Length: 401
Image 1 (cartoon, rainbow, N blue to C red):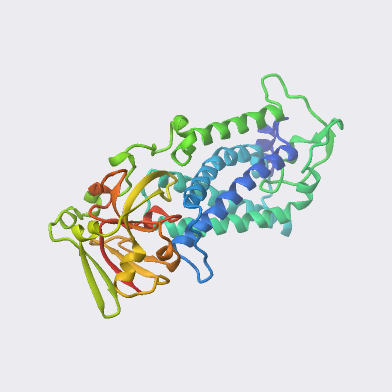
Image 2: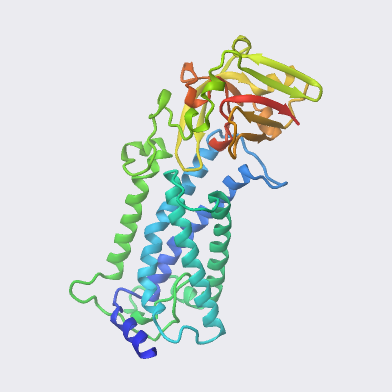
C-alpha cells in the first residue's frame, strides 16, 4: 500500500506545486473565509439575536453591503478552494496516513476543513438560487458548519505554523523554492521538505506565478459576473447571479410571491384591517384609514440573505406613529404577524431601535405605485438595515411587547 500510494503521489507531482504556492493560496482562501464568516455571523445575529446584539440602522444600506460581501466572498472561495486542493492533493495520497500525533492532527484538521468547506460552499451556492434539495434546515446547518470550518482552519494553522512562517514571504533572488513533494501550508498537507534549487516548469507546464495569475483572474471574473446582484455599479456585468436589479413587479425582485404564501384571498379582501395591540388597548386601521394618516417617503434597500438587493422608494406610515396611537412608548419592541397561514417568518420580532427610527414604515406604496400583491399589498414593513426575510409582507397584527 505504501509503495502504491507514494507512487501515485509521485505521478501527480509537478514543479508548479510547492509549499510557497500552498501558503499563497492559503492566504487568499483564509481571507475569503474570514470575511464570509464575520459577515455571516452578523446576518445570523440579526435573525437570531443574542442578548448582546446591536442593531445598526445607519447607514440604511449596511445589510445590503454586508450580505452582498458575504455571498460574493463565498463565491470567490470556490475557485480558491479548488486551486488549494489541486496544490496539495498528492500529499493526501501518501502512506501511512498518520505518522505521529502532530501529523494526525494535521490530517484530521484538513480533512474536516475540506469536507465542511465543500458542503458549505455547495449548499450556499445552491441557496442563492432558492433550491433546497436536502432534508436538513439550511440556515442552522450553514451557521454551525461555519464554526466547524473556522475551528478546523485555526487548528490547521496552529499545526502548520512553522511552514507558514517560513514561506509567508517570497525570497526573491535566492533561486530556491520548496521541492514539489513538500506541498504544505496553513490549509494544506504534508511537511516541509528539503530546500532545493527551483525547478523550471517542463514544457507545457505552468509556472507557479502563471498558475496564481490564472487562479486570481478566475476568482476575479467569478466575482465580477455575480456581484452585480448586490452592487448596482456592477449590474451590467451580472451574467450568472440568479437575480438582476430592476426586474420583478414595480422593478423590484420578489423572493416569495403571494401565491407561494397563500395569502391572495386574505390580502385582497375588502374588509382587511391592520390590528395594533398594546396591553388592553386595541386599534384597527383599514387601508383607507392608513392612507389618511401622514405619509412619508424614504429610499431604502430590500436586501435578502441570498445576496441580491435593490434600493427603492417606499411610502407609508412610520411604525412609531401607530405605536403612539395605542399609547405605547416609542422605545418598545414589537411582534409583527403576517397574513401567511404558515411559514418560518410568519411572525417577526422587531427591536425598539427600529421602532424609534423614522424610516421604519408600514409601507403602502413602492416606487410611486400602490404595493403590488407580491410585494406585500395591502401593507408591509420596510426598515433600514434589516434582512429581507424580516421585512414582513401582508401585515395582519402589530403587537407592542
